[in-house]
Structure formats: structure tokens, C-alpha cells
Image 1 (cartoon, one colour):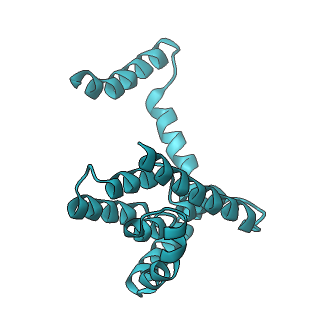
Image 2 (tube, rainbow, N blue to C red; image 1 turned 90 degrees about the vertical axis):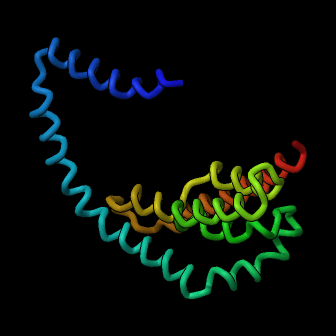
Image 3 (tube, rainbow, N blue to C red; image 1 turned 30 degrees about the vertical axis):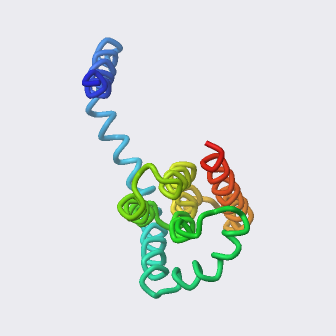
Length: 170
């Protein structure tokens, strides 16, 4: 297992050696790449701050708890354990917030329980949709993004249903 700790540094060293053989100024090109990325970071920053603030407001305002209570009967009908409902609701907004909820599931139900397995699959089978959308679409000229985001949310919920189904039969 310790060999995996050396793969990335080894690849980095091999890349630098290859560039030296091709007579490429490694450090100068590295700095040039950083300079070219600064406008992207500048344009991306407001979108990320907005997503972070809204996901925190969604959680601290209590709206997420009300939303979970509202959707619990639907989740039960779809064979999604109601205990993972908060994770399902928070995951499209916040990866770190959903990781905290997953950790709470592990603590409360144990890591080998059906609920924790479902939570793990839900966490691993998707990404924070709104965060990724803000990153990918920040430089997009067309700001009519409701369709890609809607399809992403639908795909997320389909993956949740499928993940819980797989955990149930395994």
C-alpha cells in the first residue's frame, strides 16, 4: 500500500524530467499557467461565495429540516430510508455538509448498517450539483441553465433510488 504514496510525486518528477529533455522552461510555463488562471478565478469567486452562503442559509434557517419532513413520505414510498433524507437534501448543495451528515449516520447506526450503506452510496454516487454548476457555467454566455440543472437533479434522485435499491438487495 505504501507504493501508492509515491505515485504522484514520481509522476511529477517524470514530467519535469521529460520537460527538461524537451527543453521546456518548466517553471516559466507554470507561472504563465497561473497568470492565465487568475481571470477564471476572479470570475468564479462570486458564484462560489453565493453557493456557500445559500447552502449555509438553507441549513441554518431550518428550511432543510422542513423540507426533509415534507419529503419523508415520498422517500419512504420510493424505498429511501427516511434517516438519510437530510443527506439526500443537502448533497446537491454542499459536499462538506453532506459529509458531516454521513459521519453522523455512521456514528448513530454503525458503518455496516443498511442506512449507512445507503448513505455511503448516495454520497459517493453524486456530486454537489449546484456547486459544480456554478463552477462549470460561470463563464457560459447563455445563462438559461435551468434545464441542465434540472436534469442533474433528476439524475441525482435516480441515483439515490438506484443506490438504495442495490443496498437493499445486497
